[in-house]
Image (cartoon, protein in one colour):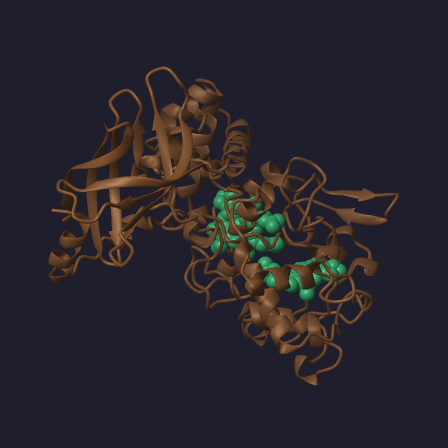
Length: 478
Ligand code: HEC
Ligand code: HEC
């Protein structure tokens, strides 16, 4: 049976194996976890441990869910619920992917600006200092003191690992143990699990995919100082080997309006002074740290107080803050940035294009790698083949084979073969392999249309000095 006939037969079977191909890549994979050092593994255990709150039931991951690029998974709330029923903080939970790159909080004398730190107002110098805070925050994990956290950790299944990493008597000294907990969390947050650099934009920067017309227009507007001017604070390129982070880690007051939902919980006269309250300087009031825009599509609502429901609304605010009265007055009227935003004069199409570009910043992008067969043309396209031999390192190629009509068993002629620019994806299991020693081409998945999925093996044969691939078997996947 050739693929053409098989695909017709199988039209009756409504398979939906597509979920198999589009694996949810934003969850932690076992491959990823197995690469962590013991300290990072420990950080992972602590990050997901729901017994470390009072009452039990809340972990770091409750508010920083991997599904949402490590931010609040409930996209309808400006503030996350604490461990205690009914308690909430005053700020929208940020995504904490890429936050490990924030420099230590400091004042730059040359630029006369504050930079870096953790939290939206920079009140923690670095990740380790930050990680200590949620455990003792009454609106978050609500432990009485450090000792309560360490007591709970002593009972954890991973207590032995903790001792292995930080010393046999570490758990007998509360402040040492608490410091170690924070260091383990910081170590975990600094791994590729949080910092994947696997968005469509990263593949684009590597020359491996094209942006759509709308996305490239969005990128242009994003960079153009006379249009969106977004890159002034959210840089889209970098001079170093480090890919761009879409933040310069400075602080600014955008003139964001108050969020009535937060006032309803915290009182009508609640104002958030941001950086100003931390450095005790009115000239910094209303300023918040510039966030990375990587994964931004996953973390609605937007801004420190979650006042904007959608990305489009956030971009439109930059566009028309000063020309449309619907936005209301700023939460803090002093220090509002009037030079770089507020009246961008972007058309609705241009706003849409910027939003389309922002959506390319979501990690877990997969260039098409699943082989597909077109019954119309008889072409079997293999976007990625890993070439394997006993001696040489694996190389990547892409190929197109054309079925020779009427051949039995089916034969395919190679009509295109190219070295591939795509790197081997982490789920390389679904990629065809060609074994140079045996001449076998294993194809774990072939899709035909959207629904039918086969697995096949072909063998290279030489006939009259010409190379063909002959079908050894073809099976419908159940
Ligand atoms: C109840 C929800 C909640 C829990 C639980 C929680 N966080 Fe957060 N996290 C937030 C909010 C809200 C902010 C922003 C707060 C601010 O700026 O004042 C934040 C900020 C952060 C930041 C700084 C991000 C940045 O851009 O500066 C890091 C890092 C972080 N959290 C890690 C953790 C870790 C580690 C834990 C567990 C020990 C944790 N969080 C537990 C809600 C939570
Ligand atoms: C002058 C610096 C500056 C410029 C220019 C700028 N931003 Fe921002 N951006 C910020 C700051 C600061 C915040 C955080 C403000 C807050 O939380 O109140 C922010 C927040 C955001 C957010 C919400 C992030 C979140 O996690 O909620 C989005 C989306 C965003 N910016 C997109 C853009 C786009 C698109 C442009 C261009 C049209 C742009 N920014 C131009 C400084 C800037």
